[in-house]
Length: 111
Length: 114
Image 1 (tube, rainbow over the protein chains, first blue to last red):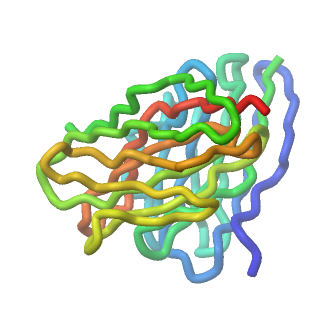
Image 2 (image 1 turned 180 degrees about the horizontal axis):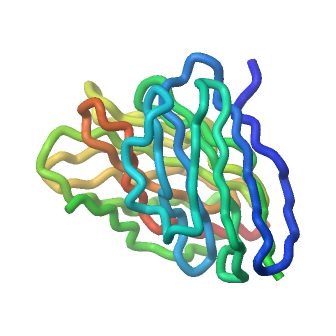
């Protein structure tokens, strides 16, 4: 059984460019979470969805960040325009009941 | 507001030493409790969880945790650590309703010296 799949695994981009991170949750899971992890701030919840509907986006840093979940098997997190302070590891997690299962993460570096 | 506090930010142990990592939470209702581990360069993996029942829960790799409701605590323990336990450990809490949102501690970095 495949776990949570994220792509790309690594992304290096220049300031001002658009970045799109992708996530495929575990089949049958109805919750999807996007997290950001940095040394300074630790693990931060950005947004989460239930049945493809955003429930809480209070953790999204600013309007440059947006997330969508067009169907139960796919979600994107977009940063436009990207800034160096967005450099972090971005994790996607999914859940059917109370336990969240994490993907391998996307390591983003904005130069 | 809910919060999770992990008292030890960095812990250094020698192999075979015993481990206890503290976790306290603030929330007045019924909670679900979790410990996750993140090995260097990897994603978070579930170590163990408590929803109800026996307050002493056993997880993978010889870890266990005890829920003490009166102390709002969920400390992680292992009687004898190994070098391979070197990792970051995160405590997390959710309310036991339909909300799946986890409140996370800042993590404890464990280094085990061989």
